[in-house]
Image (cartoon, rainbow, N blue to C red; front, top):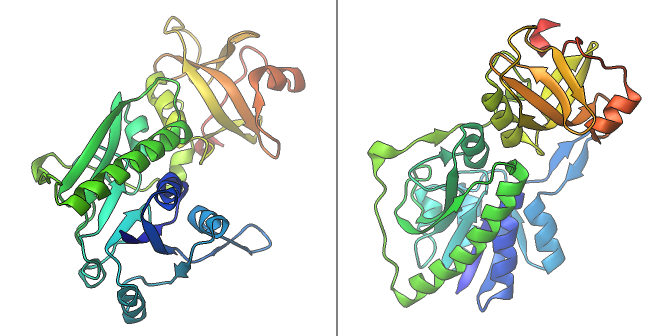
Length: 316
């Protein structure tokens, strides 16, 4: 098939590579405009644009994928199918109707659960034990199209957002090629989503990176796993921000002390901190202005003692 590929984030890369190696032809890669970040306001390419350049593929970028200019360009490509993966903008019907076959999407959840912008993060943060990927037909409603294929994946306790993203990205690439083959042969079996079951995975807000030690230990563990490594969750120690990168749930036996108190320092286990309910072992940290480090390196280079207090940012 002749394909137009829409994608922006890292989640889309495995599918782009798989399509490029397949019998299909990628006519063009559509990705979001370059962004200005950092103090120097240097232009940064999307992960998909970087990969498309590496693969020597044609690239199209626009501020509005649904405007007349984009419609005219995409129509001129005469594509068999549009494939949309983590693109970052909702395609309207005037664009979706331009390909021979209906556009399809790779979504990292078992739809109709966790539609929306942050399905992988929210899945982990909510303590789910399984998730997966869905190949669906696209409509002008967010993640609401008919399901073509799905694959369920159990979530390991030690996986964070980065781990699960890579795993689901690989699963999605394999499932995508299967779906295209079914569509090309006219053998796809579509299932309408049950609207009564749908849930939404809202975009992660900036303030969610500030941890609340008054929460239960399992909630804190899931939040940290769900945000890292893309976002560094933060506490405050000695009036400086302290990134918390890796933790494990601790024991519930500490009935004395206050929330945020360091109740134990073990050179094999980590730094044990009291939460609203239970405790967490801090295994990896990132002091403000420094690189990430193990708890052992942190203990060796910083004054931290049993009885010290870690606090929430709003308590400063």
